[in-house]
Length: 110
Length: 110
Image (cartoon, rainbow over all chains, first blue to last red; front, side, top):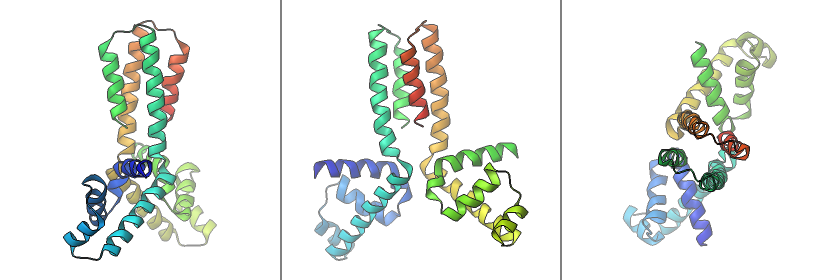
């Protein structure tokens, strides 16, 4: 379950801009603020089942966006490459802090 | 005009997976294969205006996806950083071909 949650968190990070405000509200309460389904239902005065359905549908949308755009997959592949590149630079005893900063900047642009 | 065309080409590259097959057909005939609106209309047996409207709508969708996901903008920012990093490596007289290959791989993962 933890793995699944982590993945959804990443997908939410990458694709939240494609969701509706309502979808974003439920998702961030559930996944980021750790509200229970019952608490969200109470907050919005709707049924627990409606919240559950909305969140499940949103998760499916996130998975579909990932199937199409592969942002999370490429992010992971890039992370691996960054690690290798940094190791190589250290192996060459490069002490240029600006170079490492540029790499960090590049990594953050993901 | 050329600049605009180039931008749409990039946006199409990044977001084509989010379009419908029909949208992809028209866009690739018009932008990649350089068909005229009239030729596409003839091919699909619809009006020139219908093709035009579809392509304009698709271009707007591509721009909206870019506003939300910024894939093209980040791609450009990354290109700048890659250039600086490579210059720095050359300045350090690093001749490690594997390192440059890793960077190229990273660049291609965009």
